[in-house]
Image (cartoon, rainbow, N blue to C red):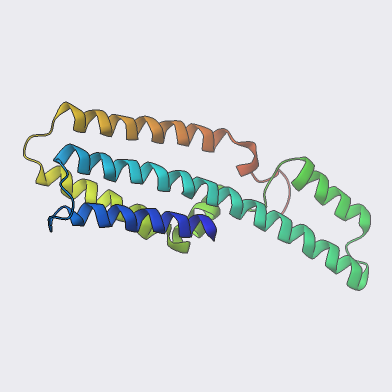
Length: 168
């Protein structure tokens, strides 16, 4: 989807800057390379979370569309049943997919590479740098703070939840 393409574009731009430093195209200090990697990771994680939300909405609306099409074809489910489903999934702000399914679906859609590459580069850059500075630790602290904030939002967001007592 679009968010995956944007994330891949940002990743490729970061890789160009990062590896350009080794062939003399760019001249980045260790702190700047590390900040570039962590900044890229923060952006692609944001796109990852948004793509999970998009996936949940897509699954929900496809399910409701299929129910309406089934009603048009053979009258089953009834309009009352469809209204209940709309009440649950649209007005009740719920999704057909659980958060584990959303995460796994988006990782398989390419985010495993898009998120994995900056993580690997951050690890490599950490080991390449002999003397980590306060700037390295501060950049890492920003990443950790961002991840904690994103996890809290993810767990608290009601549209990432499946309805209770409804079969899958």
